[in-house]
Image 1: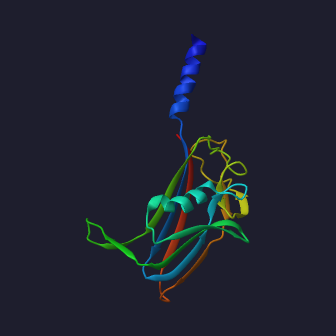
Image 2: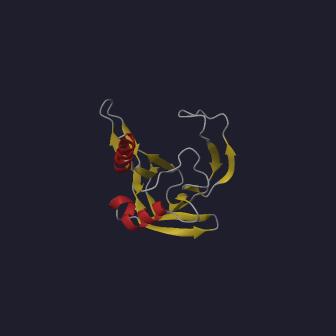
Image 3: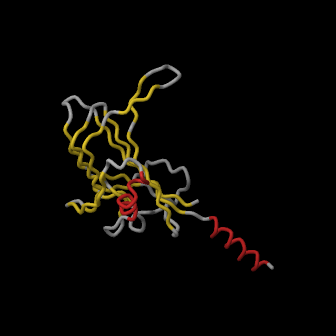
Length: 181
């Protein structure tokens, strides 16, 4: 009976276990941008990116189709190219104080995988944002989950070209999270 119960627990776990990569890009501008071309770091392993392929095929989950996506092999490795003719600033009003604030353009995709993601020590075995330079272990980082995990800091590269006013403020942020649930 004990062996049967262990087998049943494993089957329940396998049916309910889900692993995914969440990849977000946020672009905020206070001025109109024209002729926009961005080369952005991608989650890559072995010079391939299933997240990048998913973005190209599904346009960041079918959001704004004015954007054109492709994978580009650069001197720094595989990167995501995104292009658009024009980006306008987006504004929102906060209801509590009626203050107008800039709102980012958000590009988001979730890619599910049938393999457990090594979230404790992903370097070398999982997709991480590439390119990566000057990799150093962050021994002072707070580890909220366990002492067995390692945290690293590194630099990356991005390319941004656009026409705009000389006093434009542009912010680009990229977020990658691998999860097992």
